Amino acid sequence: MTYATSKEALEAAYTELTNSDVAEMYPKYIQHCEHLYDRRAEWALCYREELPVRGNNTKNYAEAAMRILKDKVFERVKAYNAVQLLDFLLTRMTSYYERRLTDLANGCIDVTVSQKYLPGGAVIPKEMVTKTGPDTFECRSQSKEDVTYYIEMSISLCTCCAGINGAPCKHQYAVVRHFNVSSLNFLPLNDPVMRQHLLYLATGMENVRPGWFTSLTGGVNHKPVELEEDNAVDSCDNVFL
Image 1 (cartoon, one colour):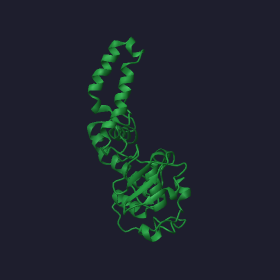
Image 2 (cartoon, rainbow, N blue to C red; image 1 turned 90 degrees about the vertical axis):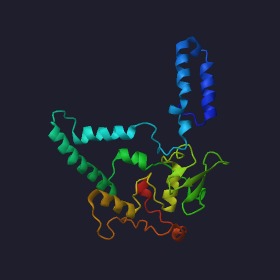
Image 3 (tube, rainbow, N blue to C red; image 1 turned 135 degrees about the horizontal axis):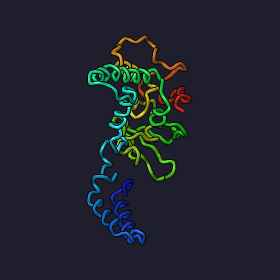
Image 4 (spheres, rainbow, N blue to C red; image 1 turned 45 degrees about the vertical axis):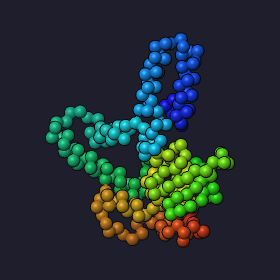
């Protein structure tokens, strides 16, 4: 019921649960489910399809920030006084995020980050993706011939079940890969402008040596897509996969 894709599917799953022979053996459990079902709008994902939660349906952003604070800044040490805690928050924590942004700007990423924001595996072929506007695309489904997904790259949304709330999906990745379009859902390894912006956020440096963020294999120059659509450079294939 939690991961039902529609309200109809949620109701069908609830009906199946209440009519189950096993569940009828536990009346208190059914009563508990009835109370939860009355509050289904608070926990069922089908009720938040239009919310741009970016694929995060829990408070994992806050939990991840606290884990970094405990593991990386405080190093799991409790013997700090109030003055030391404040000093670490104002110095160590700032330097940690500066290093992470600098590493990302220079293309130094770890496995954990790359698994979520740099998907590997097979990529949707370019002939299945069609550009329909400045930031809009259509992508045919690989498994269902009569299904087409619509992608809006300016706000990083897709009509598939994964990208409907702004989470990264393979259809957005196909657009990024084949049309050299930037997206905040994926690592900007082929976007020198975004990488320079990340370095500016971390260090405040505006004057970077020309070509510093250019790919060593002759990467993308970020010209308008219409000018290079016929001769798209796929020089980052090995980097992305």
